Length: 153
Image (cartoon, rainbow, N blue to C red; front, side, top):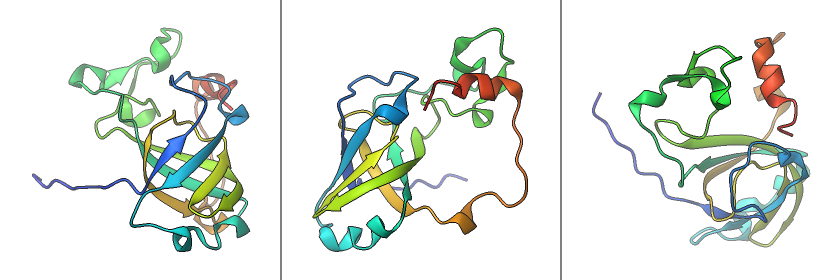
C-alpha cells in the first residue's frame, strides 16, 4: 500500500513545558489555540464533556527502523517489545493521543489538564470522550506497563 495522507493542524498547544519529560503530566495545564479557518463554533458544546481526546503530532520526535523493537524507556528490566506495544513518542507516524480533562472553552481556546504534549505541538484533532467509546469489558496490561505509568500522570 503506497498511499500517503496530508493532515493539516487544526490547532497548536500552548504549555509551560518545552521538553517532553516522561512524568508528572497531570500537573500540566495547557491551552489549545485553534488555527484558521476554525473559529469558536468548532469548540461549541465541548465544555459539556468532562474529558476530550486530543490527537497531535510529535513534531520534534524522530523515527528510524532500529526503534521498532526496544525496551520501553530504555529500561533493560522491562521486556523488549515492539513499537506498537508501547506508547513512545518516537513512532513511525509520530502521532500522539491523549485523554485530557476539559477545564474550559474561551472563544477559540480550549483549556485542558493532563495533555502530554509540549509547547508548540501541532494538534490534528479533538474529540469529546464518550464512555461508550471506552473499552468494553475488562482490560489488562503487563506489570511493566503499570510500573512505567506509575508517575506519568
